[in-house]
Image 1 (tube, rainbow, N blue to C red):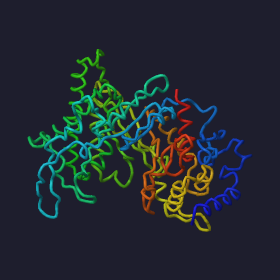
Image 2: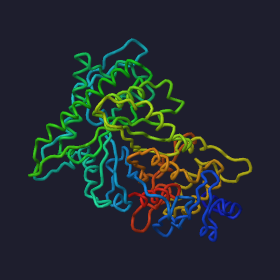
Image 3: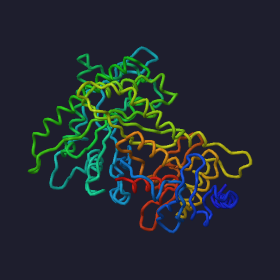
Image 4: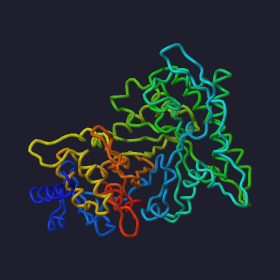
Length: 496
């Protein structure tokens, strides 16, 4: 089915469902009551960039008289640290920018594999740092940009040149300890892979790991400009095997070791003056990020989650916890936060109450569950086909309009119209400090690289600005995503 026929069918859908689709011009002017959330508010027109982007009505995003947020909203770049776009950061009005670095894949050297009895995989000891990816001497004809791993990390630091709310944008750096590397995809990682700092060999490995992190922070005095440092990125996946209690014990030892070294490093660096200005290394140390910690698929078997929460609870140098809320239902946010708060409420004397941030959130699990669904009697294509046809149309330079794109989802009985606001309100009601959401979905070339199979997690649907699905305006900015942008923009406008 080509995109023209899809659009034709969508227009029929729009005419037939009327108010449900929110696409009737007269109905756009009226307040709308959402039967699921009970919120009533005037629709907000999504900002439109470009001639192919007709304005889209947002449903119940709490415009006008909605209360101010203590929560601050930021831009998430995840592993796309090299693609941080300061112009888009400034345009969006976000207060935070977050990205992560993958330590094993970029900075560690693995020694000769230690063979294990078959069918176990070998153990790869960490025995050195790929120092040239962290530190290099500058010259008259060369800058740090010559080493991509250095230039990429400084992309994050350079976002502090953007001002929002009268102050430089704040920075969150997450340290991904990806212990699925250097194994092949699908390999079973042996229990001995994660180092045990209670042994001399394990301590030597851990010291290489921590020295890498120290050097990353010291180089270009980056530690002076980071506001929150998160010690991991979804350790329930990256620390393997994640169902092994001894691996959890070793990770807990390592985390406490790393945190103490970070505290000591801040003390030492704050004795220094750089370019005539005294250092103020004051980044807060967070643990996590825990991805939907009460998800039934991992809550009972994943022992890394408990290890992280124990460190958060017991170590007074931990300032907070990062949560990733990739959920099937927005109600899961409050459940996860309650669980985390309950597990960490009894802190040692002198330990401040833990803060919470969420550096990733979405309803991606709900999208994935409906990728191949074809409702009885529907003439619309399944979601994965609609995504791929939409990408193909964007590739021609004449993307689908925002209103037609939104209408497809509003015609689905499973799609929660107000999911973004519901998640923001859940974070706000539980006192979350800040959230960052994927700000940009930039297409890869050739365009076929962007397409998704029927069983994929369709991350391409995220991104407040989404050129992959909706193309670009004449000024080069990605067109805005009507599934996300109205709620994203509204949350930013509500910040104090």
